Length: 494
Image 1 (cartoon, rainbow, N blue to C red):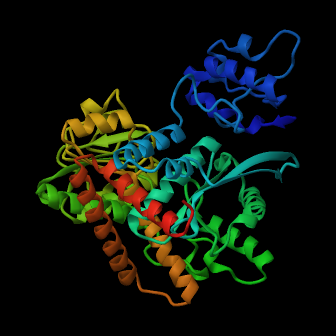
Image 2: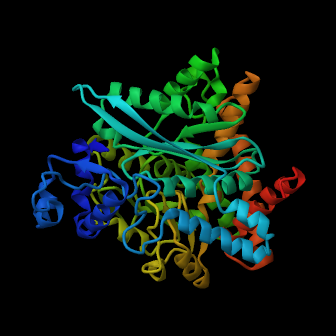
Image 3: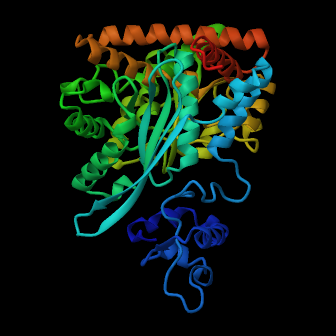
């Protein structure tokens, strides 16, 4: 099988340090599955590393390439060397809670793996006439509590291991929030920034058409995720409606308001992060009006959390995006940061601030830290340097299990992702309910319902963690797994 992926060669330009190791692994994998990949224009940054000898072997004209991702197929190497995958981490987190609960082995066996994984390969005709083959996934972990629910992301690094992990986390997130959904996640391995509007629409419709056999308003309800948005959901809904022969508004959430979207959806995840911080501060007797905060990530979650925390009186002294960060000891006003970012495309070099790296943001001497960008940024290597006493995970999976142990030992309160950023799926639930009943609420009603969900969820998780003398992540897992186990039991699954 031959894949022409010349347009994706830019992936390794910023990761040249891993190329030599990975090329060797990919060559071994190609020989195993008879998969040939071709890239005609290797970026200079890679060639300067002296990798020609690795890439081109004697007598061959093809070049090996990382496809866009570390694992294009399930059998491909899922990580570099012995590095844990996100799925490995998800299972390890689950196992910690399962051991603490003395969870029945049969229940453990069911919950360790997704119930279903759909992998699809589909062609997209590009504007220049080329036909490129893309791969997408939908992982459905567990639906004991209700229909599957979870986003669909477009990113060069989407892998089957990643969506498996994220679908498991969605099961726990929905259970923690107390909403009647199970967990799912999906994605397409693509760099959407390299596609035109038309190409993106064709890709979106093709993918959703292929997974339509396992989704539906009462089966599996997708939502936006990384590099997908309300327009993507509109295409999904319209494509599904062609086969459903009706306007199936409830098949996805995160839609534009004009076709069934909900007020309050855009700000929901960031609002949820802020609400959980407020609840934690109350338990910790932390005065937010005297507290400082650093936020890693100025995307949707980070920027909205920034606004709500500023409204609560918190002084944000540092913020970063993918290019770097800005620090000002006396504080940064959100409107100034947002205006500068909109004009310049990044927060770096914001007037009156000191430049700071994403790694340095995490280790600042602040009261509150919000990692709202990437996974695995707080690890066993840097956890001891975290000075914040309260960490709220706006991103999915930013903290490794090793770091969890270190933070807990150092009396750092960490609000786990399956609680802190569950505001998004909670408001998706509210949108789904509005779609089904064809009755829509005001923004104030949506925000009020969301706050009730988040406050109750925080109280249950905090109570569970205190009862078992464990960190809040393990407490959240114990609480969520218990609910899923009870649902499976009463339904006769175990």
